Length: 195
Image (cartoon, rainbow, N blue to C red):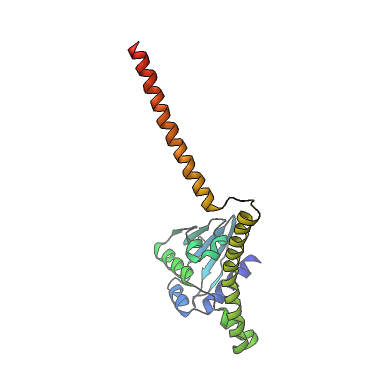
């Protein structure tokens, strides 16, 4: 089931990227073993540059191991997720797979246009993009407003400026205490040496 979903998803993205299939065709017959948090999947590269589930007894040409938190980093970008990936095996195949997966992008607008038609598909894609951009911005504004309220109105948090003033006062007190300690040591040293 997982292999069917994974190969279907990868092949869907590859169908939208001729350049990626062309690059993978150079490695026809090669097998990539992908492991994500203990779950393994072997994918064979076909003659048209698409992938298919490989037979379990075929040794992989390359092994790709994703850290369990690699998928969680996808919202930060493909490069952030790829930083959690370890690739070993045939260097040229590893390089091609790394390049393809770094640059492979989903054309959501094309898929939505197939479902809803070109005009509604474009509008739906634009709306989804605007919502995706607005969520972090809105979250940041809500957090800033909440912290301002808690600091100034609710007095549950110390405002940043007051915290800086307090830290500066503590630094002055620490310096004064250090100077006082040195004076006391000098005075006690003078008293003991003069006696």
